[in-house]
Image 1 (cartoon, helix red, strand yellow):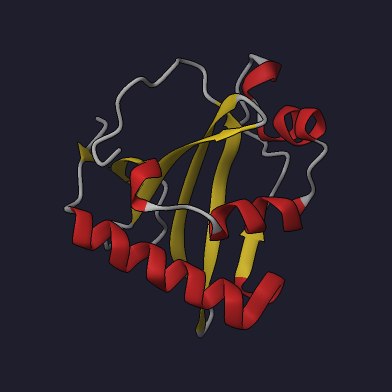
Image 2 (image 1 turned 180 degrees about the horizontal axis):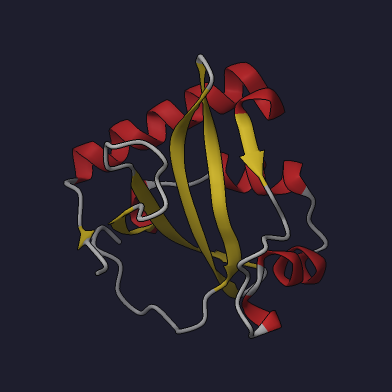
Length: 136
């Protein structure tokens, strides 16, 4: 079952502030992104790797796009079904127009060992056009 919710504007701002602080202070050391995932969809045009190829992006470009996210790009928050610990981790979804195409960006802050990293799970073209964002 998909658990979807919309965070309050201040909570989205707090999350983005934490993400940007981590990325600005730690750079790629505080960032994880796997362009090709084992579970990528059967429609190749909506995969991370296809999006990167079409945009001519690398991992650092993805990180730089995340640094430009604003509350107006926020779409929704989901409970992470694949979270490894007993607590529910939240995945935050943003929709951003890049090169005249909507890109679906799913990120969270994840503990890895004793550190936290910004984990980008999805960075691909949106499968469906999103016309309305909660804070746009």
